[in-house]
Image (tube, rainbow, N blue to C red; front, side, top):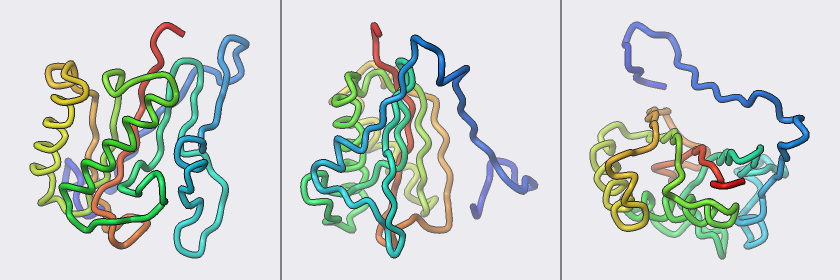
Length: 170
């Protein structure tokens, strides 16, 4: 991470936990489904591993690494920053809907943005997306952390979003 909120910091940690993933009224469901069943690659570079990009614990949904991959082909189609942000938000929205939630139920996002100069453009695109698909998030946005890693898993990725949401009325 080339820059942190406090320049004298040596690191930043973002931790999320649940009280118990083994309580009888909580179930854990793994969702490689919404992307994996449509051909989403389960590897990056030389690493081939089965993983869950979404886990549901109780009524909480944990998304890891939503990227601008095409959910149908698994391909990566654009180097345009604005298109990558829109596709990534669309993948997040599709995953939320498949798990029984919606974009309006976002609680927390962690946005990985390698180029700090893209931050204001990303915020503008995010706001426009929320206005279109989840207007309540304009006035009450999710808690958000933005970090600027040196690079993401794939060299052409310009954004990646981890998120926490909930399923209402569980």
